[in-house]
Amino acid sequence: MQSTCHVCERTFEARFRYQVREEKGQYVYVCSTGCQQRLLLGADGVHACDTCGATFEIEFPYQMSVGDGSRRYYCTTECRERGQQRQSRVGLLRSGPKRIAVFNHKGGTGKTTTAINLAAGLSESGRRVLLIDADGQGNVGASLGIAGQRTLYHVLVNGAKASEVAVPVRDGLDVLTSNETLAAAELFLAERPNRDRIMRERLGDACREYDTVVIDCAPALSLMNQNAMVYADSVVVPVACDYLSLVGVKQVLRTIRNVRELLQHEVELLGVVPTFFDVRNRISREAILTLRQHFEGRCYDPIRINTKLREAPSAKQTIFEYAPKSHGAEDYMRLVRRVTAVAATGRRAPRPATLAAVS
Image 1 (tube, rainbow, N blue to C red):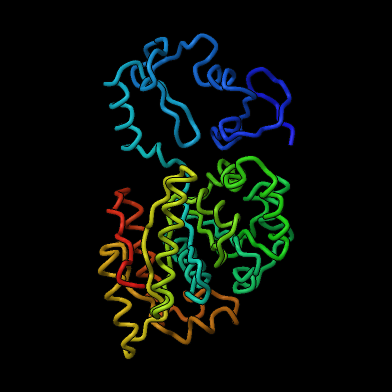
Image 2 (image 1 turned 90 degrees about the vertical axis):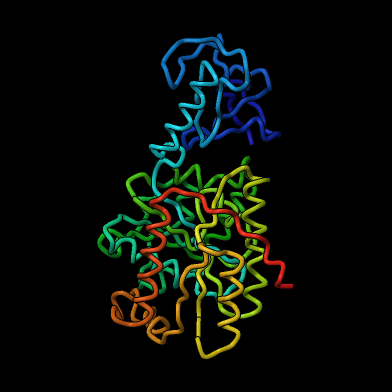
């Protein structure tokens, strides 16, 4: 695939990762290391300090910071420290909406139910929410009784704007649907440079009108899920209260670690949600104890087995509409409050230990 160098405007074929970089939600291409240096340093290497405004010439690596799709310049180490503290304080490091991926490699864990009701609960609390179905089975649309004329495929492949493609389904809640065409979108992604960042490029600036984006991921190891994880800033993991689901959590933790280390994207585990909890069953009680032991404060209160949760999709409603006084509605509203509280603090909890006890 031919690209145009942002610096010298020469046409070339990108073959190395350094030749493609993301800045402010867009891709920038450079044909050589020389053009890469000119892009980063500028024509003469002179820049204004982002902290104090003084003009200076770059001499040392610490004077430039590249992260979150943007570059910042600092004339001294003191200005760099002050600037980074200010960015953390005002939230510049995580600008735009909160982006939550609901993810588990294993199917049958209540993932779609959790994504729908988390998104619906957040919208009921006054936020404007976009729910993205990143699973080609299209269960989000089926559960809510909607089928968009255009889908996530058109956003990823054709560059359509997400807010124009999304279907308004409730006050404060829009849904970006998917169907079987998502498989073709994945083939498109596979042929692109920086193929794991296309969703982030397409949705970056286009979703700033939303307060929260919730992504329902497919239960699979796929390029689409890599894109969802690189776009998201946090992950909620539904875990059914059974032995095999506990084993599957280890794989989720490995995936999150790989996204951080290999894809260089700092995604955080927001919380683990035990689902299908039945206090009468010994395996359910043991599962809760195991999850709380390894995830501590990031193991949320369980979602109890509830018939109303199973019935709500047949009525094309969320649990808050179908049975607002049920245990299911109560449990998911408690999850909404917990996620809201954790996201509002901006604190990073200690990373959990590996589930070594589950073998």
